[in-house]
Length: 170
Image (cartoon, rainbow, N blue to C red):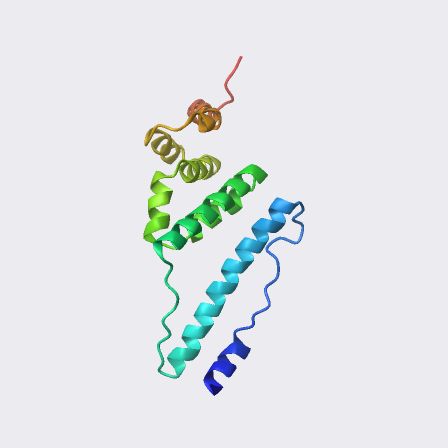
């Protein structure tokens, strides 16, 4: 029991908010979700270090399939919120930080909202080939058409301007 008390005392880690200037309930909710995820990862890492130093293995909780789909829905909600807020850099960072769980990897390649988020990040980074590949990879529902068409056109204009070395137009 003494080992558990010691680990419990060490596992309390103060975390500061990601962005002090965030305003609005959606940004606050997003920050809370990201902070919860960071806390869990830090506690798991710390628990593993303490256990390893004592030669103990700690079996961490492995989500069941129903809970993995819940995690995927969280990922979709966070990506949609970041895209709606226009924080594309943070969206890209979030997508790259996702764990390589089978459910999340499948969702990243099959879910329309996540493919759209990846396309927005590719556009922002100027990676037009990836943008085109993502858009051409599937048929999207009508709710995504306007945004994806705008990205497609802007990407083509950007490539044409770069090829000519000047802005398009008269």
